[in-house]
Amino acid sequence: MGKSLKGKELGTGITQRKEGKYSAKFTSKSGKRVEKYFEKLSEAKRWLEEAKYKDAHENIGSSTSMTVDAWFHYWITEIKGKTVRRNTIKGYSNSYEHHIKDGIGTMIISEVKPMHCQNILNIMDRKGYASSSMNQVRICIYHLFSSAEENGIIPSNPVRRSVKCSKKTEKKTRVLTLEEQEKFLEAAKETRYYAPYLFLLHTGLRAGEMIGLQWEDIDFPNRMIQVRHSMEYDSSNNKFILGEPKSKSGYRKIPMTQVVYELLLEIWNNRKKQKICVMEFSEYVFLNRNGKPNKNCAYDISLKRICKNAGIPKISMHTLRHTFATRCIESGMKPKTLQKILGHANISITMDLYVHVTEEEKEKEMKRLEEIYQMK
Image (cartoon, rainbow, N blue to C red; front, side, top):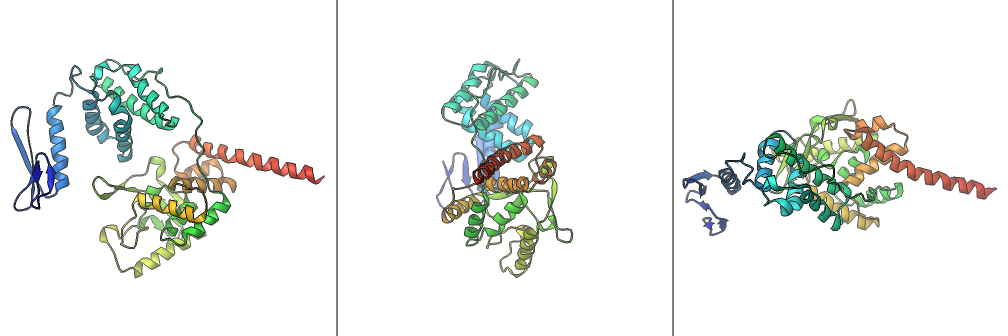
């Protein structure tokens, strides 16, 4: 176990040299000693893990001894890692680490059968996971083995039609009523998060899109917002990662309401007076008092506190987006228009919102009818 110059444990294979650089080394399968130097400890750890893995799985094409673990790591880094967005990689990795790995990770890939894949979903079902969560895991398993089949690693994909997720009644997505929305915003005024929450309730942006919004995306003369980025905090690397929107449909222009126009103008004018400025983030719209973007978790923690003070059930960041969509539907906005504003890739996603809202509207209309009958 290596140590730093201050005596801190650094992990097996890593030491710190007198000049401050970190040495990462291991012995390969062939018995050769491999060593490399780095300025940062995180870089040394990452290289060591990747180098050891690569050395251990050089013969990735052999299905007689290759485990599902080995194929997944190759697939996610060398195949998917080169072609899909970072959030997709994150989703696949979470599905594998939390649900798939324990079930079939150590199995030889060619020995995995449909029943093994079904068992993963059955375990999730018994633990009470929603159908949507189980479906995400099924998608991950399917693509994992489909790629193995395409590359000749296995003769056929074990995720057949018979491998299914149990159907459950999905919980309705929480939406703020107009009364709750007013209470929420009133309580939010007492915090430093009022501006971003108000912005989301009037634009419907995803949280990552709001965090990644830059001043070059704001067209004040034409009162238009251009969505071109999405940003989130990567805790493993201790930094913000700027990426693309969720899909091609995520690239869009959103007209400003008067509320949004005045809000952004106020932020722009106050920014000129702000004493603390971190050059790395100077072009971003929503920053905290330290001149940096707020982490995703900071917004979640604040939401919980605000809801408690407002006396309403707790909500998530997605609730604000869903609430915006509901207000748009209630105002009579056409489905295709709302789809463009929300950046939905498929109109069916937007129509699901319409069904949810119109069902509630039917109940309200029937109650009005009852009132009319009672007046006679």
